[in-house]
Length: 81
Image 1: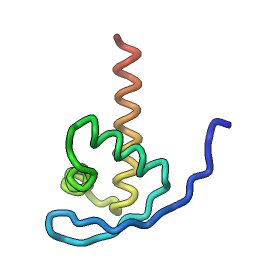
Image 2: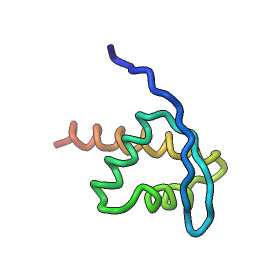
Image 3: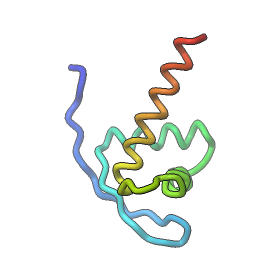
Image 4: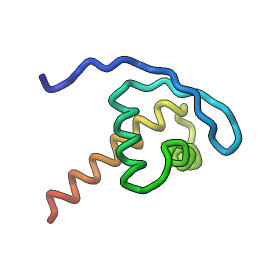
């Protein structure tokens, strides 16, 4: 199966001393953990970076778009090599 069913989970996090919550599918939470580990930062710090650059998108959409762009650019970079 190409796509798995992923439950949406709402999690509370603290970003720059501000408590907020994000609703994301499990797969996106796992991607965020992987990306954060590769950058040697916490998931909260990664989300803070995304928040700083999100523009008009809502926070959950901004995270999904960030993950999409991260893996798209990784895929493109691998094809060029």
